[in-house]
Image (cartoon, rainbow, N blue to C red):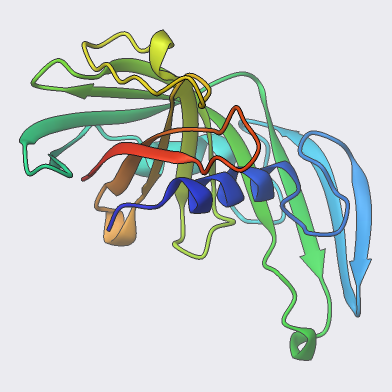
Length: 204
């Protein structure tokens, strides 16, 4: 099922504050909620840590390449090739502790990645800067966004004068190691009272 732009925007917002109580990505900090305690810090891509795996190992576990059908809202089908690669030298780890009764969020890591995302029909031929994390309820997942005008493939979309230039949001996850996800193309309002425009989308 394709994610709506509003849901993707909420996911992107939560990525800016994954602990929900003040710890921002890339900033060493602490936060509390009930008995839950969180502590965020930068770690190296090959650094052992409390999660039991290095960021690089996590990326490589789902890095691919993966090939899978991608289906647009109108029914057109192509073949997607996807691979994930470590980007940069550090990841952002948040360690969470607390009483089981308080249902504290699990410890998690945000890893900068480059997603190589191309389709056989040429609509996408992208190198997307994003992040991979075990924070999501869907399990290990990645997210990236880019303006339509910055796409390297042949995909185009336009919006009316009451909207900003269109954006493309990519969200993928790996249930049982299988690459799944969605693309949402939308345009934010440029005028009060004008709703966001949901322009197009696809699932893989």
